Length: 172
Image 1: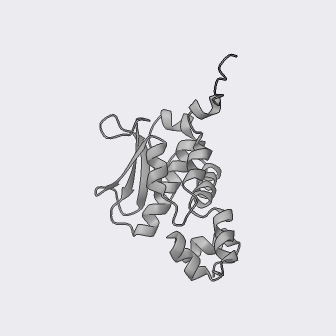
Image 2: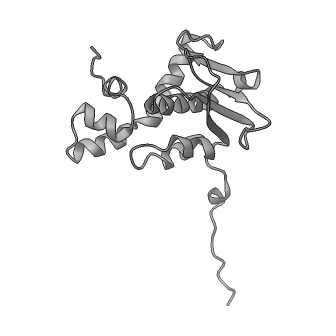
Image 3: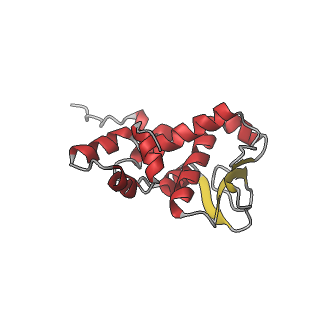
C-alpha cells in the first residue's frame, strides 16, 4: 500500500497580505502599530529635526529603511498618542498610496502639504483609525463591560476625541 502523503496548503507558503498582517496585530488592545510597520517592511523611528507642525512622514530610506526600503519618521516632540496615530497614518499611506510613495516623500502636517488630495489624506486617516481601533475589538471590550470613552481611549492608547470619532459620538 502506498504511503499517504500529508497535504500541505499552498496558502501557508504565501506571504501575508497587509490586511492579514494588520488583523494579526488587532487581537488585543492597544494595537501594536510598530509590529505592523515592521511586518510590512517599514522602519519606524522618532526624528528630532521635524518642524513642530509636521507630525511625521514616510519616505524612501536606503540607509535606515526596512526591507521595503521605506522609513516612517514621527516627530519626537509629539505626545505618545499622537505618535501612534502618525505611525498608523503613514502605514495607511504605504498601503493605499504606494504608487505616489514611489515618486517621492509624503510629509503630513496640519496643512496637508504632502501633495496628496484631502480625499487621500481622509482615506489615510480612516484606515489609521481602523488599524488603531478595530470595531470587533472595541465591541469585545464593550461586551466585557467597558462602555465609557475615556476607558476605551486609554485601553487603545488613542486620544478621547479619536475614540469619540471612531464611535460616531460628536466631538464638542
